[in-house]
Image 1 (cartoon, rainbow, N blue to C red):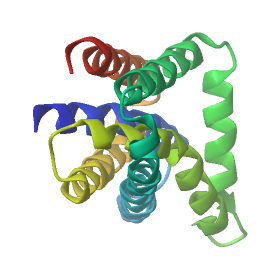
Image 2 (cartoon, helix red, strand yellow):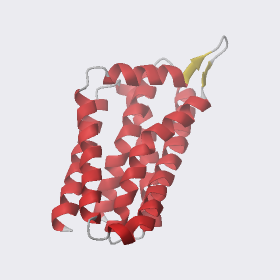
Image 3 (spheres, rainbow, N blue to C red):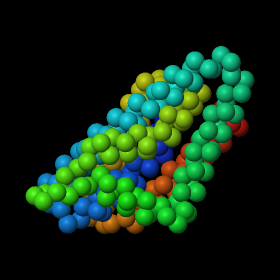
Image 4 (cartoon, one colour):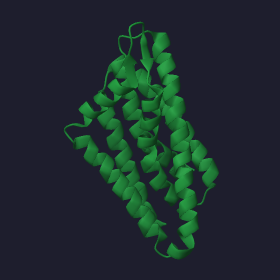
Length: 198
């Protein structure tokens, strides 16, 4: 169960970073508006992050018979690559600008009030959960109920998304990179464990 929680936290970090960006862009908005934004982030990111690893798990289960002996190595490599990608993105110079641009797309202005672009929010939820689909393959290698694991991943992401919007609203973007770095390190650690320690 500890592995599932660590995996869930690591996978939630992309959504958490984007949620912080959304909150930071909304610092001049009312509490009512930020609450609405936080609920949308929680629903979009949480549902996408819960469904995508389930798809990865089911695809992995279909292939497991062919890949049984190599599965721990494949799963470990997937997690290490995903973690490495997150760490690389932390040090990419344009990462903060990219998140700011995404936040601008989600938060669209009209003459009366600031609204939320749901189409972009949906696209963003899918984009931040693609890594979770790849990571879902590794659920075949852990001794746990995959459906429960996906539910936990979705709930953890929803909670992180909710808190991310409020963190950004209150404090700005200083947590974005730290969150992604932590997520990357955790994924690498779980990948190494799967490969070498089962």
